[in-house]
Amino acid sequence: MSVRIGRTALRGMAVGTVAVTAVGLTAAGAWAKSDISFTAGPHTVRLGASVRLVGNGGDDDSTYNRFCVQERSGKGAWVTLRCSHGAYYGGGSLNFTVRPAHRGRLQFRGILTEASSPMSRHVSIHQASPTTTVQVR
Image 1: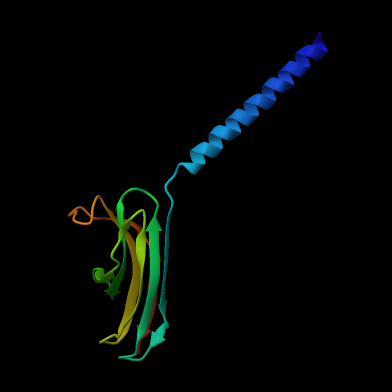
Image 2: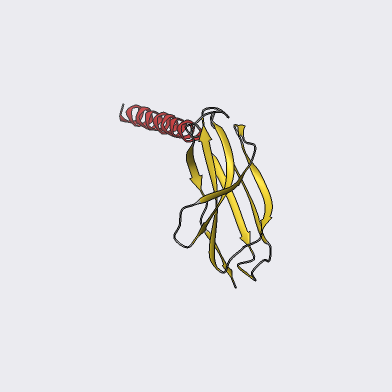
């Protein structure tokens, strides 16, 4: 009798473990995934030389997403240089150059914005890349 109870208990534990694992895997797969990549270089340039800005971003949720590149000089506010066309379930990519007009440190970053539609006035920053600093001599 005790062998039968032991087997039943082991079988119940195995079924419970499989059920908990299956629920955990389905919950992990339900999250929306976003990704952003941004580079700026070279890190030191002469005044008037080109700085290449390359990046892309995307999100698989149902909002309208756009990838934008922003610049900041010193401790000033972030200024948007350019944005991709954007898409639902996407974001876009950018590849362009800028020429610094003054000496000092310039900071660049890529951001992924989200809104309910292309014409929405309620745009929010969904994700931002780490800041890349370029020294202009």
